[in-house]
Amino acid sequence: MKCKTILAGMFFLIGTAAAQAAQLGLPSPWMNSGGRTTQPIGHYEFCQRYADECNVVSKSDKPVVLTQELWRKVIEINNQVNTTIEARTDMEMWGKPEVWSYPTQYGDCEDYALLKRKLLQEAGVPINTLLITVVRQMNGDGHAVLTMRTDRGDFVLDNLEPRVLLWNQTEYQYLKRQSTRNTGVWVSIDDDRQVLVGSIKE
Image (cartoon, rainbow, N blue to C red; front, side, top):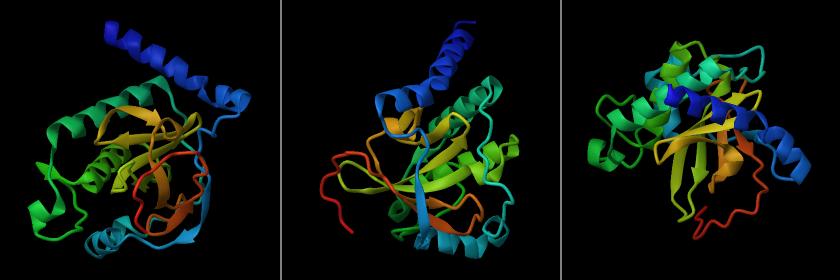
């Protein structure tokens, strides 16, 4: 009962995020995407193996309605994947610097994101609202997370962070993500927040 109360309280706070951002002049709870950009090589190779997953075209780009039931499911799946998959680098697993795959026991950041996307889609979340996203960490390292587009903002499911946060509550620099219209297309992200990211390598 206590857990349900905590989740309900978090859900209420989330509902006020957009209004507070507007009033305080904070970054929008929704990312501002730009034009088409390059597809990560790891995703390109993933699409060679899972072609059906990379040619899904969506007629709508509307965000999903974030209900309390969905929020509970998001928390459940995020915790499930983060706690059952053990972090390993692609070099450790495959002997290559970049391999995107569905993890069963071990995985890299993008593998966590892929599995979360798969489980949320199976739970009924529209694929056009579940977007693999490439970011830059504070130390300059590249990283991948799953973004879920909702009517309350863009939420980030991250294997390095146990909480599910709005994108503007994180300290990443957002670079690109999948298009809401086509799972095989990537678009840039206009991240104009004042985030201090050190040693960024192009």
